Image 1 (cartoon, one colour):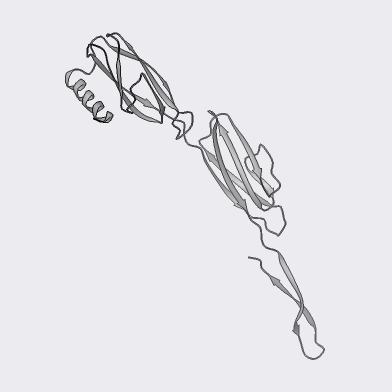
Image 2: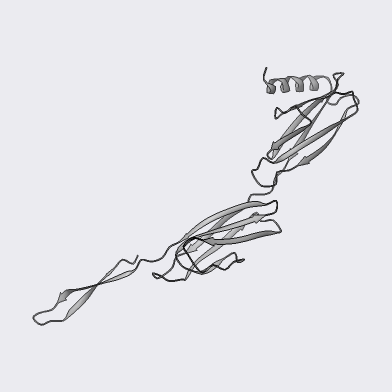
Length: 205
């Protein structure tokens, strides 16, 4: 028989007789996940009253006094003592809000220029956090500043670490207008002995 079916059977038996065990209560200690979406939460229960040893039946299929590796959500445990008395308790684990990083990128207006920009919008920040910018092939960053201006073309990465050592990263690409090339060949001749004009082949967008 699978553990899940055992849990359901035991829960049904407990609810059909009594919601709470005679003389058994539980004390508990909960640790919530440190970061959004993590499986680092835990719940520990300690029976008070009844007769040991005790058996533990968690909705997570754990069978010890502590259930580890939990995400945010609802969890139920049934504790049965040596005489068959039992107690059931449900717990709710919460988690921090997610951190979202979005940005508006302004491209460099001229080839080789440095007037690009990244305007960040960040939600879910904790009261204290650290912010760091890095680039592989660009220039113009100002550390400690959320919004960036005066950037050259390149790839830029922002790393924000919130409370609980939660790391959040986002990469942005700043582009630039392509270069302008001049063709020295004669492309315009007006009449005999007319004027000659060098052609300008532009690849500007």
